[in-house]
Length: 499
Image (cartoon, rainbow, N blue to C red):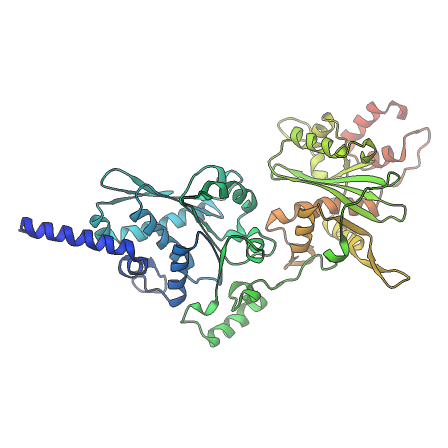
């Protein structure tokens, strides 16, 4: 039997070891952390960090906002989880929130975190701690009853408002659908004078919030982790991989940050040049024609007002870009935009919208277009021919050469339409269809889609049919010709002069 004195001595040694590990995060990582290595025969193996991983761990410890742009399969997520385990073990009552692309990815992070704490039970005993591992969270309970928690969620528009955390871990940030909404609501929850830390990790995705944060001045400390951070990778491995996946290697396995940000696949709107297409706002002359175009869903209202001068130059001069709006709320914002400068002449002569808004819903029996009309917003159906629409939008963007040698496009965008400018600059060619753009991340498509509905309608307006006795205006005929049977019936009832 172990004597009382021996037992006390062992307990004292465990406490001293616990304190030592708490003060030295590299010692903690190398002495107590295990991770999953599927290339190893044992699978769960001791964590023996590479030099780049050591530097990353110390950077996370020292920096409040950390951003990691990395190559694939470089182990930085494990490094971040090790930091999170250290924080929760040595700061009872702390909370770590992790955000992932999907619910499966969220559960996977919890599973990995569970592997870490399951393999450090001797250290936990030294601190009088015990761990409870569940599917969506891990609890570490102290001797006094304080509970530290690791919780993981799938990214969603409301995720950022549902927690207050000491550490926010955002994994594969560039590929999260609602990254902008989450960041706008999550940042205040960790932006406290006394604490709060963010760890953002991802390979790159052009046009994402992650790319924007990486390429702009802000409070993040930025770290690039090269493909060769894994010492097992050499030039021969790299060349073999390049033969297998081609130019995608620049984004999947970059050697430099510049390679990671390379325009792989190419920008879809290569015609767009902010120095030529973006203009400072000015007062729109009152004799110009006004149009509006919108893309609408609960995920986003992208609404634009466009003025056309006598030479058919188009100026996008007003933007609404808001997620989570009901039809009534979207209609209210559109009405405000119509009179945003107190001048009713800015009412659009045509309000263009995608065909799907005119489809009847199974539950209510009416379309969203009817809902907008009931709120005073009468929509005109545009075409949803993507390839034709993109072709005509590119025609508007294309520069023509003036007699004095200047290059001048048909389409101009006020600098205040920031999301339209951002997305036109960022959206890439679809790798499977060069005539279309990538639809992921979907957040990039809303503003260009709205402008596409204007461009395709502008170049292909409806022709007035050969009918007599109809004293409708040209605008009425345009709406009628683009309507389906139910819409035409409603128009006939509303405009009795057709009878």
